[in-house]
Image 1 (cartoon, rainbow, N blue to C red):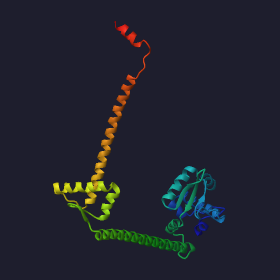
Image 2 (image 1 turned 30 degrees about the vertical axis):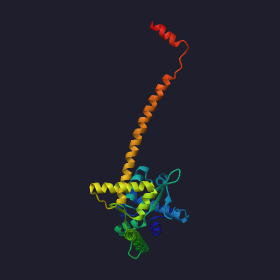
Image 3 (image 1 turned 45 degrees about the horizontal axis):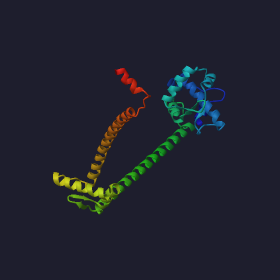
Image 4 (image 1 turned 135 degrees about the vertical axis):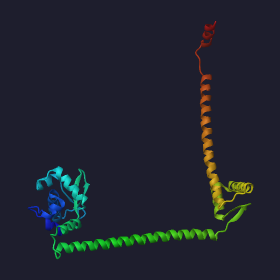
Length: 273
């Protein structure tokens, strides 16, 4: 990581004056320390996902002299500027940091401390080119996937419409027409006798009221669904009434079948004299 070599060292923290004015003193100091820690973990090949490294508030305090309160403020500002990213991981929970090299270089460019011919500048341009190419490829892939999905939807729609056009509707009762597939579905769902009764009922209704439907098959399905709901309500009411009557009957039965001790009725009569 060229940036880490530029800003950090194992023996001291490099803090640029211009970065102090742009980011703030604490932010610039902590950024330099994080770059140093990145170098430490990178040389030992112990980076998480080749970019995240572990650090603690205590470690930052010992190396920078900044207390945890001002650390939180500085780290929050660096995160809001997109310079660093943090994430929690492990038990007990540890904080891992990632430095966004591109963002830091942008701020360094604003501070005018990077020569146009420097390796950092070349790396910056290379990274931007790679990100632009990657983004363009991702966008193209999204477009291709969208085109495939749209083609599949259109093909399915055309296939359905073609099937409807190929299968003609037959008249199964006066003014009641449907395809053979729809008729067979009614039979499979309700049985042949019930299906024919439903078709006949629809025929009589249309003749009596002069009604017309775009799909007689759909009309029957809606009728049946509505009637089933009504039947469910009626059944629930009936069961509730039946349970109530059953409880009353049980109460009466318990009273009639109660066993009385010997002499109970004799004492009852004697008390009434």
